[in-house]
Image 1 (cartoon, rainbow, N blue to C red):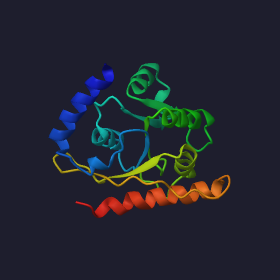
Image 2 (cartoon, one colour):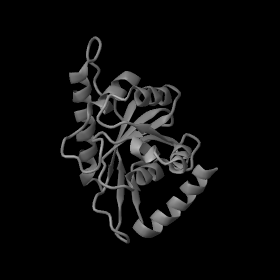
Image 3 (tube, rainbow, N blue to C red):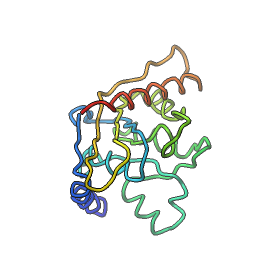
Image 4 (cartoon, one colour):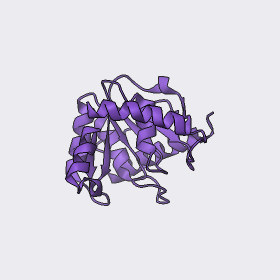
Length: 193
């Protein structure tokens, strides 16, 4: 219930403040998918969730930094909105298992391959690992940066793809290659209007 209330009011408030434009919504698959977006602002998860159809049955789930779950009340709100914690900078096995569980049960998982806002380090291998291990479609999404109230924000949803699987069991280099491809496809959407 809380999810749908927050979703409804987010759609209205963000439409008034940013009169956002969603391009390519038809590219979203019906079933399971790994939705990967650039990350330049705190509102990115909201914009991407709105673009994905915030108030649909197959609502998006997403990782959020573990520090956001320290306050019990805020943690309860985050969980009700579909978030689960990830310890950044480590191989968080619990977050990986939860991600794969979501994808194996026909869910939609939203993540930011750069790992944090305004990262200059490129994609983290985790995005590629989830894409290759889940064997699901990856949907690249670009959210225009530099948001200010009453200036249009564009959310561009690209065509889904599957990163090329290597022969044999994939390793860390394969995961990084897949993650780099995901990030490249995200930023290739920057020029779409």
